[in-house]
Length: 387
Ligand SMILES: *Cc1c(COP(=O)(O)O)cnc(C)c1O
View 1 (cartoon, rainbow, N blue to C red):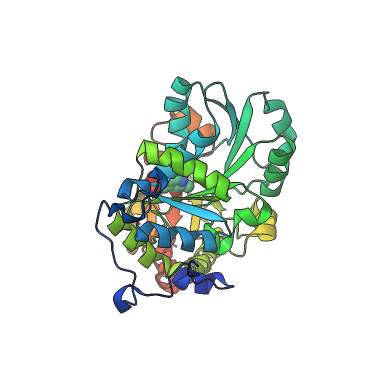
View 2 (view 1 turned 90 degrees about the vertical axis):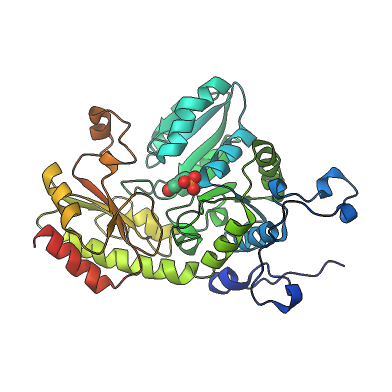
């Protein structure tokens, strides 16, 4: 009789406890790091039972997988060595040579680069579509279309697509639906609850929350996650045991961090949208935002990411020079507020005319709102804007 692992009703409890064994290791309150690559053969009656760190089956991997499945409302979860390892292993598990995918027209840069630079050599094709407008999706379908890939909140304009329509469309056309839920986090939105097949994350961001490891996650049904695990084992994207330990530690504060980030971002977005120096704020929590109604219907919070336009390249550059609390750095989802110009970081590889077309102009500033005092953040943004 296998012992049952701890599981509770609410996410706030599950981020701290889900998946723990009632039998603590030598009485330890904290799950220790199993810093060993291999294990004795004693339980291995088949290859499937061989325990080895690349096979993602150490006690650290197992605890994380149970906890993440609980908080994403999934049957199964898998941790990976990076968000990109989760994304590429997932895509390659469900599409192969000759297949076609539909993708959000503005994707995370690494995902887009994989689709543009590596997928063609494998004869995997994709068509970008507008996730906010289902009327164009049918025309983009091909007999070889197998998968539809979206992000819950897109970067850097924070667009929220018609996610319910994506699930319905995927079911009607027998496509695997995959969503990158990094920006929303399971605190605000759990895509499996509306029917998405696979959820992926860069756990580097909010799930870990401390800007000190790179990690990823894929969740879904037992059958789908087993397929991804098989691929991941071959591609080699296993998460190191010590990084597993740090991710588990980070997860414990996920709910309190994200709730604080939701509140801080909303306060900052409201302040910024009243500033004459700012042309426009992108944040799904603002009633004026095009994605607001959709986000309000599905999300319990609007996240910690926002962006805004300052009308001139020089003023955006001057703002980044003058701001005192935020750090000028890429990446996101940590305790500290970060500011960056996407035209100078994530979208630097695109020609200026292309950037213009998708709204990533030189005056766009993206903010990953941290857990500092909202009052101090607002004051600091005000002085940096010169208002
Ligand atoms: C950072 C990020 C990724 C890639 O994750 P890594 O952990 O850097 O490999 C994927 N999707 C989104 C939305 C991200 O922000």
